[in-house]
Every structure is written in structure tokens, then in C-alpha cells.
Image (cartoon, rainbow, N blue to C red; front, side, top):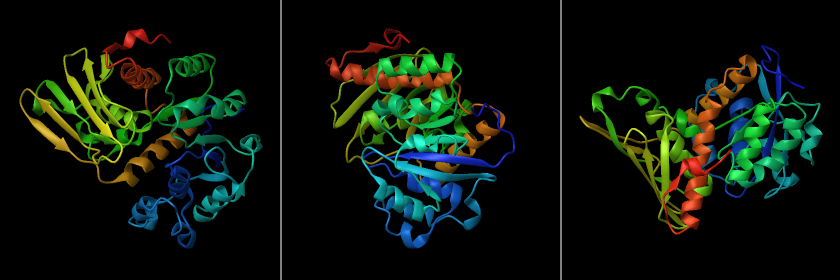
Length: 320
């Protein structure tokens, strides 16, 4: 059992993958280990080598921490894991995730299907290993209740969206005084609410903090149209769709407004992983678990609203 904090020991970290359309084991592992360009050139997600190759060599690596084991199950198999290992300099490939037990100090669940996370993470959390779990943590009330209970039992895990750490957004968290009272935010996002909705939610959440009241999704599976109400009166719209561009924010206050775009994926991912390692070493959580729970309630409420004809769902309906 790797009880936090782990201090300054050399950290061996395992990584789990993968789900359709999600290449995080390539990019995140490279941020720890560096990469082999010959194999990274063959990455089936061209956006990953594109942003990796723009970075100077000194930005790669997290002192004293390496991805040492990888396992791909579900959408991918050992062949994909072996290619990821060659591309991102991972020394060990295993066929069954539980083969990592006893070999690593922590595990990253790098999959973005919240419906799978209870099953994927249970063996490691039961064994006492600390975990970083990719967004969204869950998509159902039952699974959120499971993770809340696990936290009460002392199991060690964190979760977040990298968009919280976008360098274009960070300066405005807690510093929007020149705009006056925040009244409206629009946070467009590509892809599906089930997988990328949390990106939109978490990038705007630090602007307002906890206290969201209701969620209404009048869209479809292919194109979400989500409206949120905060207790302070601020309204948030999240237009989202498959094939849609956009990952910025329009912020409007009583005295001013600002549109912010996000253009540096590497910075956001790397800071997220740096803070994961800091958590392992110090036990200091980068995001309050209560905030993560509220954001998961927003995701669940958005799905419930869509499935129930677009009615407004109050967050207090989701009982965890």
C-alpha cells in the first residue's frame, strides 16, 4: 500500500488505456519519459506529435517520476500498448492491468469513458494505490456514489480536466474584478457531452466556484445545448457538438467582457501531470474533492435532462 505522501522517492507509475479517440497514453507518457520520434511519427492521433514536436526538450520530464508500465484493454490491445511503449519510452508492457500491482507506486487511468472507471480503477484502489483518473470521473449517479464511498473509506484518487490549467484561463480565476459581477459565460466545446462536457464545465468552474443550482440540456447526443444556473445568478451556456470547433470562453460581467481562447494543449496537460506528482509527494490535492463531486453532478444532470425531454434538473436531485 502506497500511503500518501510518498515524499521524494523515485516514482514508478503505471498507465491504463484506452478508449476510442483518446490517445492520452501516448502524450502523457511522453511528458514523463520523452519520446522516440521514429515511433511517435506513427501515432494514430496526429494532433499529439504536432504539439509534442513544438516543445523544447527541457519541458519534458517530471523529476523522479516515470511511466514504467502500460496496459491497454477495451478499445485497444497489446499491439497498441507495445507501440505506445516504443513511442513514449515505457519499459514494460503487461497484458492484464493487475500485473502492475507490486510493480508501481501509482496508476494513471488515462481513459475518458466515465462508465468504465469503477471497474478499471477498483483493483488498484482496493490495493491502496493512489490514482489519477481521467475526465470525466463518472457518467452515472450510481458510479459517483461508489467513488464518494471509496473516498470515505480512505481510497486515494484525484480527477480533473486539463482545461482547468489552460494558461489562457488561469490568470482570470479569482481575478475578474475589472469585469464587475459575472453575469454570463459561454464555453463552447467539441465532441460529446459524455466525454468532453467536463472540459467545458471545469474550465469555467473556477470562475464561479461551487454553488451550481440546475442544469438543462435541450440538445441531442450529437449536439448538446446545456444551460447552467449558479446561485449567484450567473448563467452559463455550453454549446457542444461532434465535429464542432471551439474550446474558449466568453465571459461577460456588469462592467466588461473578455473572450479567451485555448491554444496550448501541452501546457495544460503537463501542469495537470505535474500537480498529480506533487499530490503523490505531498498529499496536497490540486482540486477539492467536493468540487469534483459537484462537477460530476453537473455532467450527470446534463445527461438526465437530455434523456428526460430537456427539463431543468436540480443538482440536489442527485443524491450521493
